[in-house]
Length: 306
Image (tube, rainbow, N blue to C red; front, side, top):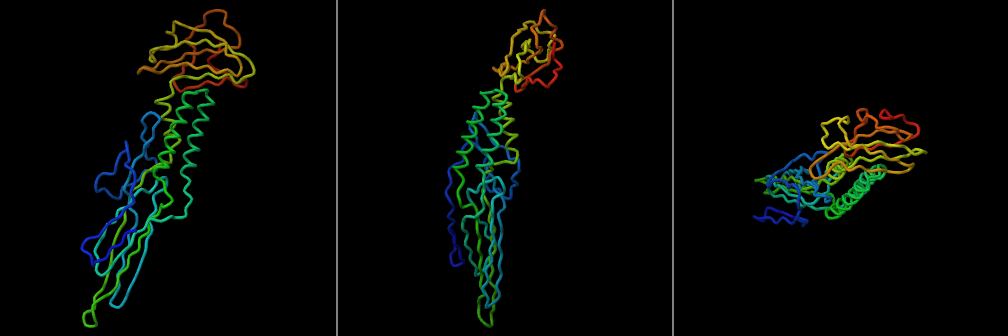
């Protein structure tokens, strides 16, 4: 809690102590009234997650009392959706014979940030598992762990700033004077649950962890595939010289590494239910890049078949 009155020439600001926010963009010194984008970007370093800090407008309170009166007014400041309150700053306006208190309280709102974050990561992990991409699934689990640790570092049950200002008229019968007090509160918040978290996770995995094309046979029978890796993605499948023919049994997953060492290749693939008798032309093959997947199903007709 913080208290101020005009009888003191200096006032003491006591703010909640928060840990240093490592490896994340900071609000510039003196900035105020920033807009928190609903899609605020998260920062990543491998599987480690960090977030951005913003200083946003909280609320303002003003009261004026005539001679012989005493008045009080209040306002409450809540952090924007998807953010967590870490600190607040009081900015005092003009005042005469007034005072204020600022308290950090529990709002009573059930802010289920952890639940939202967990559900988004779990959904992306399920997609990776469905593709048979164990590497991506493991990376998503590590990112989720780091993200939830970040939430626990900042989140408290005191997520509301309550402001109360009071003023009294003063003087005497022949010299009546008003009293007034004006203050505003800004909030320092960390954006931990952007509205597009699902998309940010997917983009992160696609650009940094997804290095392969995945083939999964969900049909009730075995299929033959002819595959070739083309090192230069600008070249067509007709240029492929090393064609490999193999059998993908039912319920089998096959992984083709295409990305690594700063280079990215592409996969050319033909599909058939019988073993090819001769070398087929790969110019009619379908092309796949890292992150793509092909699910073989009995009820689907594939354009790249022989």
